[in-house]
Length: 353
Image (cartoon, rainbow, N blue to C red):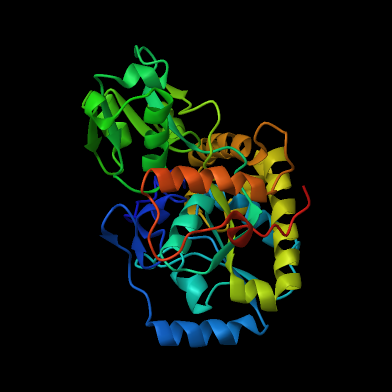
């Protein structure tokens, strides 16, 4: 994950997806990318053991503060969390799961798919709750583009942040949907410059997030459309992730924190204006009315991901959904070779569905 700058809307270009380069905490499979700094194994284990015994409970919100973390800001502001629960944003050089594995955090907001990849690399992580019920990564094209389905990518140039993380997984799925291979299209690694690449005509389509990239490109004055990568997406996006040691020693504390977080998610979906207000304490630019209005658009788009199609409760996560995701990641050689993830091991819901 590259560190992404905060825009004046108070929304990071990759606030929730900076995790892409650091999904494994140590290394991300299939990319050859080394994750950011982490402490030694011995000190990490000692710290994790100490923190598992009780005391404060810290929820990691990853990197740049922004409106997409509003459910957790709202739950904290409204007193939903138990005494001792704190919110923490990661430092620029941290791996996504570093603080979780060192014991500095006890719950982190991260992609379930990324957690599964990390497990395959040797991390002992468990998904205990959901956040996004719909997968955020999609194709983004100019409104007047001839591309209407993944099949239309044949012969076209597609820009992606890199061959890693959720946007890369989504592109793999789009090609599967259309029975395409990499030889059927041109893939350009454009970093987090989707807007400039698309507006400048350097690519025909980009892979980005429907609640972030698509909204920001539109806000810049360029009309765009989003295209789903598949009718049925086997991938699971942003969720609530912990370690097995914390789950075993602090299950009730985690269950309470998950419940409170879900209450925040529900409030977020129902009231995007309250979401903006709660975020102002964390994102100073939102004091400006224009930036607040733009952030509200992102909140509304994010709310659609949080609620999904309504077939499952907000905040829920389901063990059965992990099997097809693991199979997809494995079939595309996106998993490591240290451990084969099993659905019932990597998903232990602390929610009711």
